[in-house]
Image (cartoon, rainbow, N blue to C red; front, side, top):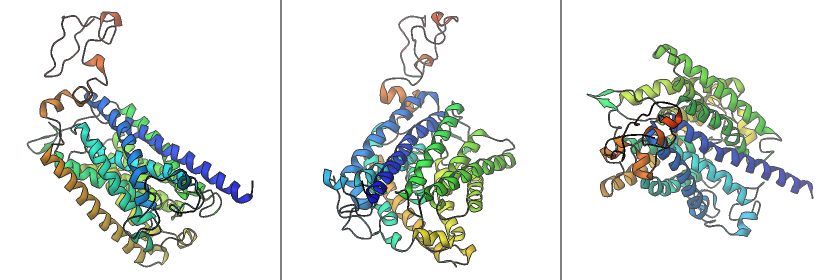
Length: 462
């Protein structure tokens, strides 16, 4: 095996392992969202995370990968590589995916589809607990196409924002900002959950399991070491082992995000709120995603800390605006994504921009306002396109078929209405030997029964 072939093999192993880490983030989203929502919807939350991974994997193979990275297109969309063949997926640095010069097309697909799945998972967080299941499938297909357009603009060498030097190393804009924009469109069209606002005042609807939420955030933090460092797409992009520097900046930012959020929470709401602390880590990871390869370690800490503050203030602002976002996705992924993207206009190290051959140095390094202008242009363009397209498609679905569960269904919980089961059956229906029964070692108790569910055949819950 030649030295060149060894380099290809090493890069392929690295990118596939990174892709696995990113795919594992779906488990993190499942725990995070389940923990921050109510028991009656836990099965539904889990089901939609599995469902969207299946939807996006097939759609991205058939259409999205070619739209995003296929050769022969233009500044807006790729022009080849749709439903790629065996030969096309095994080739390295050749049409239709010549952009992947160190790994085969199959490795490129696996890594990029994991990113598309993350972006789609963000959408549903803002729409949780009142969205009908079929919407995940229908809009999941559409959003995968929207996502593929934008990823071509910024990450493909043919993309119009790429040609202007927009810096978004691993997707603060492409993945997180886009997901939050579509989630915002959905939240506005759905309206708030029943009971969230009374006489215009927000009411607390606490999540049912903060241990789940904590586990979800730790899984996401772990998965981000595939998300950001893996975006080198080789073991030597930026220099041999440069991905380790990206990983270090990623961790520094996340740590600072926790501190930023707990500080802001202590000041604003007088308590070190755990949910804010956890979302502070997520917001910091989102913000550093664009910047991880372009900034110095001190800047990574600054970016993360500010993101932690942003997520606390942003979550409260979203609630005061009358928008119901059960998991804080709009602040953690949207506002923090904007901050991370814009921070490069100030903090990009010129030597790193040159090393990565992308854009210019930031304002604080004497680079002027050019890079800041490019970053702002990208945010405006992506914001206008993704929000408008998402709002129109979801709006059409709303007026034709309906996207929100009926009130009695929402009150009962989406587990039983959409899936015919409970995520926690022992709390809702009699289960032999289950919680609250004689066989469980406690007095026989009839578990609470939601509205519109018929009573059990006997009075005993055993």
